[in-house]
Amino acid sequence: MGEGGQVARSVSQAIREATAQLATTSDTARLDAEVLMAHALGVTRSDLLLRHMADVVPATFPALVERRLAHEPVAYIVGAQEFYGLPFRVTPDVLIPRGDSEVLVERALIARPDARRVLDCGTGSGALLLAVLAHLPAAEGIGIDRSEAALVVASGNAGALGLDRRARMQRADWTMPRWDQALGQFDLVLANPPYVESDADLAPSVRAFEPAGALFAGVNGLDDYRLLIPQLPRLLAPGGVALVEIGATQADSVSAIANGAGFDVSVYRDLGDRPRVVELTRSL
Image (cartoon, rainbow, N blue to C red; front, side):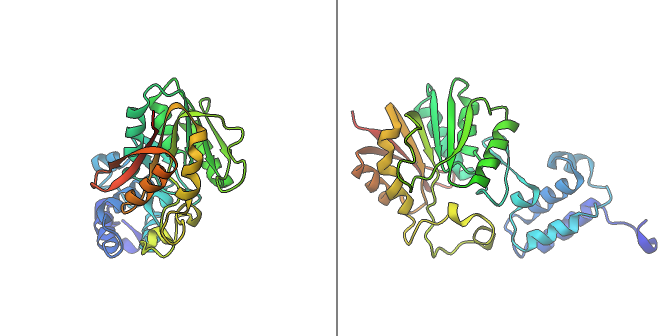
């Protein structure tokens, strides 16, 4: 019984009510409600659904729902996001890893399964680099970012995944002179640079919460490609491959930039059949 003799709501009831509330702001209202409830209970979502639907609602749950109603991403509320089957801690200092980016990891593993050195440009949470290293046990890697706060998150994820002996996170900014002077050359270069147009119509959960410095790249969203791609040849070892994430409408523009820098280009699509990754190789 609750206060005043009222029967306390069950978890199942609270999830139904939260789903109805969240439907006004989220396309994944039921999933959001379940993830938030699992977080409030301190259990996995699977355990929630199997064992806790009749439990009493935790006192912390309503505040979590209110945060989501204000468009805050679920990943920031719970502090975690799965990517390529691995758990990553995320904070508002880093972009939330998205499933669309997994095609970049897949292509990297196909392109150079023998890679020994990997560079991740704009590493954020470390998701791309650490997912690749988790599947290349002989490889070592460096993740660079201009954000010290992001590097703290990435370093923590490397440690949590047991990859801190093979992954080093360091500050570097490809808009600055000699940023790559001491990095050396790599078999794989990964990059998810900012590529959103400055006036893009973004969902409130993205524009208001995710770090602007990792999102926006000028009027056409191409500023960072124009800076970074021409610098990639000196970072690639012989036979090296670069894989760069792009926006869904940018394949032709980024391919032209890459061709101008002397690269052959292949474009790969994500699960939504949108162009998502350009693979850059040097002509033989």
